Length: 323
Ligand code: CP
Image (cartoon, rainbow, N blue to C red; front, side):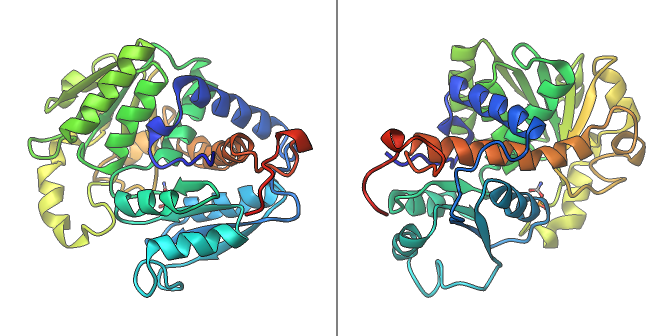
């Protein structure tokens, strides 16, 4: 069976912990796994712009013994001149895996349905699960554990980062709180899925319009841009709507004394976060950015291993059929 990673809950709690363990091990010993030896090619396809996702996947695929093929917005037929299903069939004949940054989650699901190689969500309008793996790795490095820790996300609580924090942190057994203004809160189905996960891991979920309630005593404070890709024309309106949710020094003071700050980047100083917070001693954002590399290498290795497609697995564990 081919394993994909389209949403945070595609990994069980045990699998997520294994991926984070492997990420730590690959960070300590960068070239210790070569599942893409050949080199095999991984397609990294962008319908939206990127710095971290592009650089970390390109570097990570090379580190794993493979060769990245970056396809920038507008460079392929995917989704406009050729159906997603047909593109997936073609990709499966040549690539070892596909990473896709796109708009609709349904597109990723369609790609995975027709792909015999792993498909990874490099960000969609609904989720950004690779980012959450990097964030969890960063928090684990800092605190030594995740279960029982409290993460507070404040800002646009209806966006892909809020959704993925809900699902990914609940999977890790964390207490996850998201705060945003009325009308900018997560979908009920996402909250229900996070609550179900949290029920199995000992975590918990809080959704509120009160930033102070979310921040009180939190171990980690996170936010994201108020203007996600595709919302640029709404910038002035959104800046006003989210102003009360800015992560300022005063907001950080409500969290635990040793609280840390995370941001997936790019960040807008003076809007969702104050410069003194993101550039201050509580900020782990540069470790967080680097950890995209280690977390995604571990993820790709896990998906290839569990799909029987890793080049460095013993022959008995490899899938027999040809792609
Ligand atoms: N955090 C993140 O996904 O960064 P990019 O948009 O630069 O890839």
